[in-house]
Image 1 (cartoon, protein in one colour):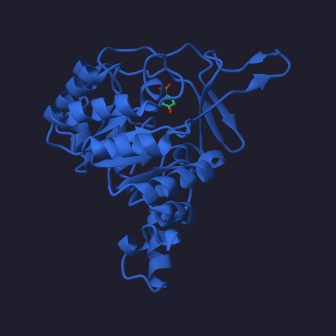
Image 2 (tube, protein in one colour):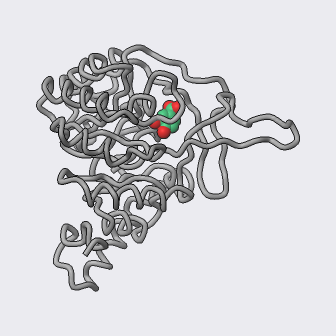
Length: 285
Ligand code: DHB
């Protein structure tokens, strides 16, 4: 799947990504009102990933209605990523995404730097339970929660999602991080801190998926630094039923989806596994 945050803000960009082989597309996180995001600099390219503090820029849920027909015309499931400040906002956004034709919603409970959103809500298990329950009782499409690695309570939060009837968890969102410009003697990002993505965080993501798989019965989607078929298999062997790809589209190009799929197929054909499903969680055995 295409991960949230990359090429997912407009219908045409989502449609373009569909041409490159993913099985599903996750939108940029959409909120209630339009948001401009933070002033630049909001992105730093590092040797092993990106550090960003976009600030949840998005057109708002009403405007996003105009993007969905062209996104849906690609013929792939569209997963609507949404962020809210409370359970009511998440509920209303999920209802709208369902009306627009989304196949599932991904609750962004994990943006590492937006005040009053994301990780601030997503590290409190009882709050998470309330948000997921509220969304679950209002829509029929599957509800997944995207979790933050920036907490010791990861498994408790995952359990809260499961107890609330959540259909899956997505692990992980970006790792809270910062860079300093030594010449300027100042933080590089306008917001001081941001979220680190890319290969730098893959071992963190794999560890989180492994811990969640040991504790949960609902499916897990692995994300964070997947750049090739081996990375994808690492997540699957830790317990992920699917993976998402984000930063590597910028680092390696749009062929990465097809390269990952071809590599997994080759691996499967040369292994004793009959299907990819048999590999999920094998590292636990
Ligand atoms: C943003 C949102 C995220 O969920 C994240 O991990 C990083 C950045 C953002 O829009 O600022």
